[in-house]
Image (cartoon, rainbow, N blue to C red):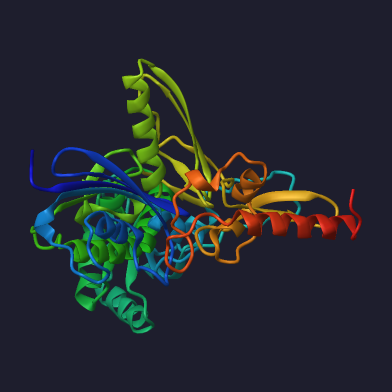
Length: 414
């Protein structure tokens, strides 16, 4: 047997689950809340620290760990909550509105009030350039004018830029020169469409480049934070890898925003398929209900992927597992609106979490399962409370449901 630990981490919206392989080959599972700011900064690193038996704050000896493989919802949450980095779009003159217009598709054809998704880019620069479909350069890139416009945007605080020129998927020279100018000025995230999604069609290619520019800085900060705490820097320490939306692993430093949207759920599909195969089944329907959402997938001999998808109102063209996600999980909030009971789509997440998590949260599906006896606190990890050592609070759940019954019944009891 080796002398190092290996870790597999699934960071969800509510819980982070870790499976560790000890140096002797035995396996151990561990569970933490994905957010517990009073106790730790990052659940994956904290879980690894706890499994290694290290004191809080003590550095992790990098030679103890062989590999860490991780699926994360960091990029997904940033997209859902629109918390990516302010992004600049640089496109061919005359096409500043092309991505906003998109395909002119209406999500609800009979809706009288059209609510368009919020744009991910904060500003647009129209570059004076044009390459035709056959490669003919109709207008040479005005580098001086572009440099001035980029310097002004940089001065306004924009650091992420998506560069999307007509026909650049095949003739990328103008995008390459624009990217070099942006790099020299000091933009820290540059996503030229020919490198991000080198495919025909301006809108799909442009949308993907914008998503990449918007999410990659968030992802990079998270990856760097985890890598630093694990000592996986400059080719030293453990091998750190992340699950991509397509279902494959990639090195931490090659992990991009466009490939991270379904990082967590994709690992669930791959795992479910492998478990089914071991059990002798060649066909499978995956039902993965977590704290925040439920993911449903299908397998009939091969992993199913989509190459053009829409997530949270954002179109992108990148290979992803074909997964249907519903905003319903254990953390879906139960409420009474005066005339009927409602469940979700809002979620209590990890903070404050369900009522039973001892953080003053609302009643949720999890609490309903405790109330009906389907979820037994004695069989659930005791990771709640200030010391992360208390079980689920069943008494608080019963009290909250009694109060709801009083409110609905107007003080009357059955």
